[in-house]
Each structure stands twice: as C-alpha cells, then as structure tokens.
Image: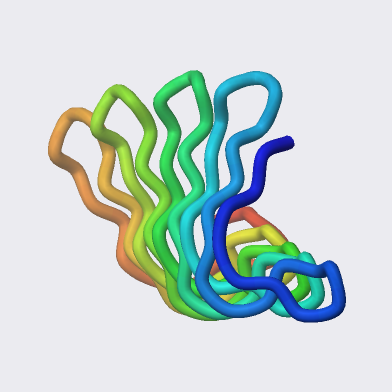
Length: 106
C-alpha cells in the first residue's frame, strides 16, 4: 500500500491518500493509520463511499454509490446501513426510512 500525506510517529495522521495494491484508493482524514473523519473510498469495481469514518469503519453520515447508479444516503454504523437513510434504486424508486444492521427496517 502506498500512503501519501501527513504522519506522526510513523503513522498516517491528518489528511492523506492511500492506494491499495488492487488499485482501490482512499483520500481523507486519518488517525493513527486508520481512516477517521471525512473521506472518500473508491473500489476498483466502481463503488464509492463518501462520508464519515471511525477507526477504519464507515460510521455516521455517508453516501454509498454503486456503478449502476443505485445509491444509499444516510447513517452508517460499523460499516452497515443503520438508522435513517434513503435508498435510491436504479429505476428511480426511493425508499426513505429506517435501516438496521444493513437491512431495511420498518
């Protein structure tokens, strides 16, 4: 993994960018070499997450976009959709409501 940016005591800390061996990349905030704060992660398959991170996990408000245009905007907890959010389907339909442990809830 190639990491560019700010470091403290040999660990990524502050703003930086990481390029993974498979070509995926992260650009955003780090604390002690973990994604933490606001950032953008782009996978090589075209999926993108833009939002908040906590200790390398999607946590708080964020937007996840799939290559086909489907997207989720809302709350995340430990890398899962959890809380209030909106799921936009490729066909234009929208689900607005609750999510729990990554699933529709309510």
